[in-house]
Length: 366
Image 1 (tube, rainbow, N blue to C red):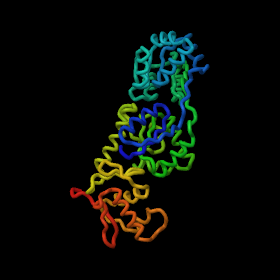
Image 2: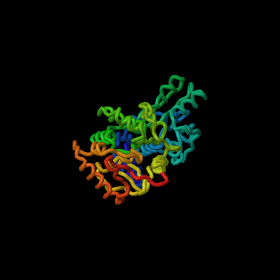
Image 3: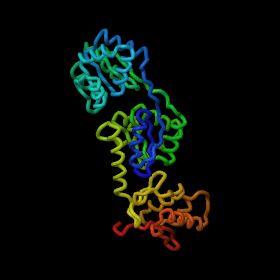
Image 4: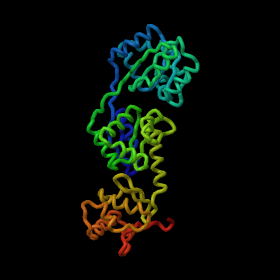
């Protein structure tokens, strides 16, 4: 991922995600679209916990691993951990995905059923097929709310207790989010990484608030910028806007990083083969034979123009078009090409075609 600029839109575990991307050569920008506010001292959560301890539910649905762990921590802070664990060990535990199951196991408990798709829809489908009328169901929610589970089960005759363990707050740095959406629209970002559905929705709303929806969606759908989502729930707000994000087979940050690395490895395997080696143009840099070239933004755009021609001749006036200002002097194009050759240290990479323009010299096999 040398030369790739990746935008991380999450606050939670962002440093871990950034470190994994940077180890693979990426440059990481941070712009968390939301903040996560834990409910450790939330009177409503503690009251709901006391209520289900007084009237134990038949089923407890655990929707997120981090939410379940935070619930146990909140209970512990109020002296309720032992009775809560005791109650949970005696009821049916349903996990919405492997991460929720892992948190249940970390608490010394056992999940009776796991939704491998990590969706609330699968949880609802299975429990409704078994019948929930007359059952008491407690649902540990994530910050975005119930995903419709409360309403579905109540309509089917169940008594539902909601436990919202954390909630989403505003972006910790709204200006950073605003700057990130403008950078994405301007072509300064290669990939945007999303790790939660609320975060995906919040970042896209920030895009739309700046009037950049069409430009950003176009960059995603054209392949100029990659959207990467940790799983299908996170991907939904993007898909609703016509964006098909890259997703790993398993909903884990490590798997997400590997999916991104694999994507760029594929791009490099089909990169332009030149006499100086494989050439890949990123959003803001160019990578030649695995090395980032010391080019100015203008130099990158000139090289991008030549590379896009695939070895065909690019007229001087088209080179002039990507240079700053409105010069029509052919000498300006010659200077830009000379600087490009100097930066690449391969004067044979860009050939001058007399009276016609310039072209990238492809490898003989190409």
